[in-house]
Image 1 (cartoon, rainbow, N blue to C red):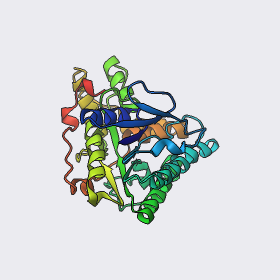
Image 2: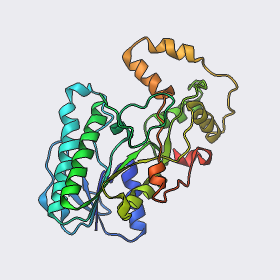
Image 3: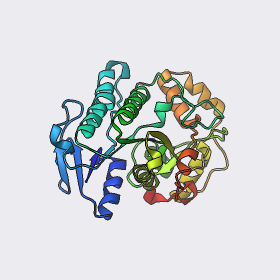
Length: 302
């Protein structure tokens, strides 16, 4: 039997669907009862996990986390720590006590720290991060790997790159909507590189590290293996919505000037035009190969 946290989220729903297609029994932890499968109701921000949650569970997929909160991170660091570290450790410790065989943690590439421009980061390129989300995810990774080493429970960590697919939210959805409505500006070609992965491929990667003994005690970055510039992504989205690709672009200099207006604007421009390139070579050595890349993108992916 499988236990999934974050089952109501973007990745969680896809993982649940994949397991249901295989006829697997599923239990989820959620803030609200789920009609389609057995649910343990628990709010990670306010509650501790009931001890009976892990009974009869063979594998845990821990996807839930605290992220993308618009409040000042320094003022709510306790929530990041409570959900991303403390709850994760509690779940793993309960898993050990209950005889769970495998624990798969969905972390983040942010746990590896910032990526320098022009470099494609792998799992060994660990950098310090001031980002509270990345910092708490990294702390959780280290604690989980230690629990696995001491207990003998199979523990694997997946760090997804930018995930896209049907019903995705966030910046990609906003960008696609802006291009469709005509207000999103043509991005300049800056030579930056950004890694992505389709949610279906991410689910395949998650299941792979759960099943392959070589994945025990390891961290894996998940990408489609083909980084793209922000302009490449913009062009692909134009094709998705049936818009002709503009031959012109907004000057990078203009973006640089706008960045000077405030730290928040600079952060958004860096997110748009900066480097976030990651290598999934380690995962590929387990036999993983992405089935979808940017060239396969269509409107059903958003």
